[in-house]
Image: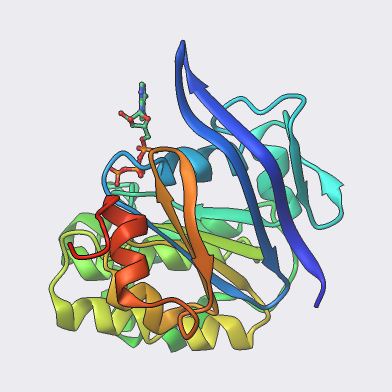
Length: 237
Ligand code: ATP
């Protein structure tokens, strides 16, 4: 396996407040990795550090064979690391298709085109000329994922893509994951829904209070271990 992303002892701060403590983390080429953890565990901060939105100068973050610590967010994006932000953040005055095309502008060559995005999210085809705001929450999430894919990332970062969506809609979104992998795109999802994370990922990391509290394959970790790593509960909790 080729290593795509590796952090060693990564830390992050908001002023004097330390949000991440020594995160060792890897994603290999072709892997789907999930981060689980309760509110405030540091999951979003970790993604912001990877994408250059939190300062990481002088730290150890390797992506696709080069150090990206301290690099500007747009340069990291051009190397092939694209984020689907929490809350989707579509451009409200633009149509679905215009939102998707914005993702493609000036970025890497690769398999992702409008056609490919519409193939994995067929619900968007009839909505292509509609403004992003005229869509359901699930469809907006599909556009946000499609927009990130249009930049042909090597690694797609997804921050809480199931937040606030109905189970059926979450299923429709996650059915795209195998197709995304087939195109050679690695995936890192932050997911509060533990069942969903275990179902989709090759490996999971649980974060608690800014530290990795558990890591392994879905097959190798027990529900009791996850409960302890997630909530800090005792053996019999
Ligand atoms: P959530 O699921 O609620 O987004 P999370 O695991 O993503 O949780 P983070 O958002 O990374 O957690 O937050 C980690 C810690 O950093 C929390 O204690 C949070 O209060 C703090 N934090 C996050 N953003 C800021 C900020 N802009 N300024 C100050 N502290 C922050």
